[in-house]
Length: 494
Image 1 (cartoon, rainbow, N blue to C red):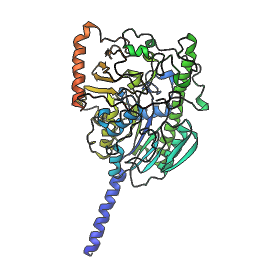
Image 2 (image 1 turned 90 degrees about the horizontal axis):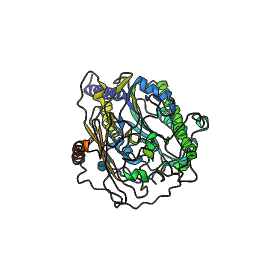
Image 3 (image 1 turned 180 degrees about the vertical axis):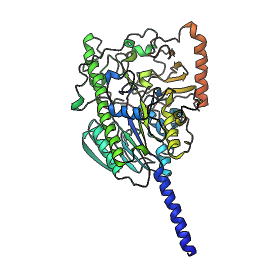
Image 4 (image 1 turned 135 degrees about the horizontal axis):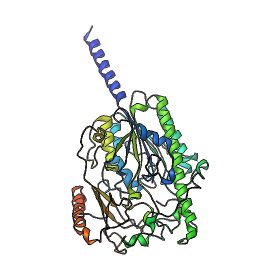
């Protein structure tokens, strides 16, 4: 055999081994909903309105469910940036829904693309309100400007803008399946599928429009338990983000404190929940198609949401605050090569943990500059993992949505401490909140002004300051007010 032939065969074998290694790398399908609270899935111990989500439940049964999954900022764009970058809001600097993801900031899709993955984003992006152009890190790109619509959204499909007739959840699923059908067989892929649902104003499709009509939906008990809460929470009751307000268009005349107004609230909550049933149908279609392709077991299948949603808790609608309904989100993952069926993880995991986890499970590398942790070690129940003790929550006041002040808070073990530094010119009277989450998971009793807990509050305030400094947020400067105005009655309510 000549030297040239030997070199040729050696090179061919080397390239062939690289192809095999690449083919063995797991794929990623990351399904991300919008505003879906942690109890709005069927596998939850107390599912919202008794919702049944058989397809999402299947992922939980065949994989892992996280009982304590939280976002670090409960607002669409900042939370999405946290998922992609593995960093807190003050680090990635996507403070609001009008700021785009920084093009020079690493994301897990960009890093996977550099590792040879084919990458795709299909569905709701929602960073950079008026720009639907392709972002760095994606080979295949389908999205739209702003919120999109439940029906007949105009999508940018790889540079071609066109109206796609039909219901959002089904149309993005169609496009995801088209992408899967056209991926190269010898290359791994990473697909993010972003749903609009259950973001308001909620429009269920016809087959689910009435399925919760017989389920009573009273105002939560905490709606009236506001005596020890900050004054801004009481002030919020008649606004766009309070239970007496317009309820994303479900109430025509507002504010309305009458008992009869409960009908509007019931319609509001039922419609929110019904849109999730269509998402579950989508999840089932994606699952079935991966199985049909023979790649299901080599795919890390993730289901989660960007943030939670308050449905009357503490008299509130919407999100933004650090209360449980606002920050608690579902997370379930199927990947049988690493995850035993029926695994349950109780540790508190965060949106900023997703990027470093995906990087570890796919290519075995760390996420550069990530402030989150990979939860992959938690999957091995035979080993004791030294998990984080404290984490940070932050929200930055928006002049166009003035119903929530700045929020800075921490979870430290069983304790939650929340402070409200001024960001509204001092118009609102602020105070602190302190809860023992083991004894009081519904946050009924604010302990911040109780003398018996003065030392605990002082220690937690110091821990908050320490955490802010340790994560690069000291001095804790508030973002500059951009003075962006919005038209509240339109569908763009965030």
